[in-house]
Length: 210
Ligand code: HEC
Image (cartoon, rainbow, N blue to C red; front, side, top):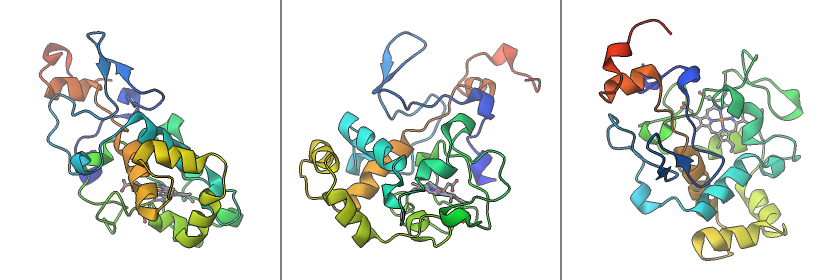
């Protein structure tokens, strides 16, 4: 299955999230987005939307901010929880605004820069439009982008963050989508036993045992 193609167990998950960079095994610093050894080129074109510290920080803030939902109660991070690889723990199906139940479970989010499409049925074909689905879904965040633009524009922090990330404090839907793509696209899992084996490291230690 597509989602297991580059996959690894949650135990092997190394997510580059909390700071600008993370330490490599050699002690150097990795950038937000990098292509791990043994991985193919990503599907998402970061050349058109280079990850910057300000863009990543903005995407992260948006991801965890319930302001994007109709009544400011549900964030992306409500259903995509970092401690379980950005899935939704202990829920058969996700629940969103007004405690309404969806019909599907939240997939874990990692290595999605390599995905050619999204959702369990592959119904969304680009990372930069994917957030429109949960934002407008009546049982998830139930909000419109015009309303979100109004809310973000009148906030104290967002205009400055957009200016830092994209050079203009004019907030647009495209800039929102690009910031979130920078954040989500940088969620990388690449250090499991399997990944090390594929990268040609630790070959002697690879077995089916955990
Ligand atoms: C109410 C719970 C809920 C919220 C809130 C939510 N999601 Fe999701 N997310 C899901 C579910 C359920 C799916 C699978 C949907 C499907 O297959 O139709 C999903 C799928 C995804 C995927 C595709 C992953 C894959 O493997 O194909 C991405 C990316 C994603 N969500 C990002 C976001 C972002 C960004 C936000 C905020 C703008 C968000 N989600 C808000 C529940 C949620």
